[in-house]
Length: 287
Image (cartoon, rainbow, N blue to C red; front, top):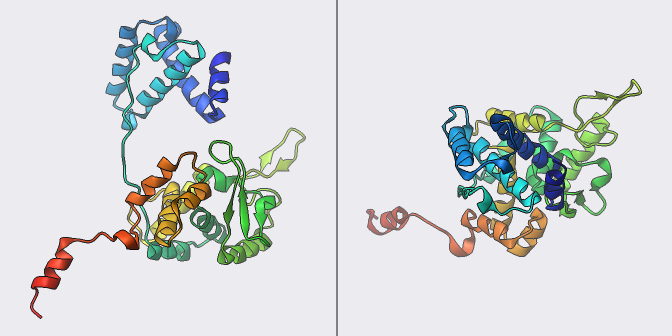
């Protein structure tokens, strides 16, 4: 699997991606008792059909990751996708869930723990991904220049994003109260080999729980996830007048095509969408 890991790393994928894809490829190898590259396309299709029919496979995720893993395996062996006649994976086009400003305000006010209020404020106020928020260190905060340095975000790129004065005040209060030493958001202390403890960063599940709990307390029934706050950040900035190229840099997108998708959701003053019922009532209702 050495070439497999090298291929994934060279193409800029994370170690998490490697472990995910290698696990699915290994499962297929165990199923047949041989390497997937030693199979014929019929055997591969039978296995993929078997995965699709598994009752416990949510949203075809296991199926898709197996196909992606096989693609990387073929690439690492210098073989074309046609070698195993791998199917194309259709990407679902979904419109992002976006919160209103009133809902974000309720979300922040509903947080019963200061740590959670600052976390959600950072996710929304800086448009951070979950991993980026978890990875913020004290040294990344520049209160004088009102900036946050996002280190090695998706695509292994650094970027700066503005810090709101309101968030800075909250961050200072939080730091004074919690006294973090390295990570801004600490998790449970972990034991080291010397017998002592060292601080770990807040877990992904911890971040997800904080957002879900805040939504519950705020009475928000939309399907909100951690990434929803990033979508909301981008949409609100567009509606507040920021240009699309600046937004691309703030979000750390590689391609402008990814950023343009937010134009489908944003309600821009220049192209305000309305229902014909509005003009119908204006024209026909009794004066």
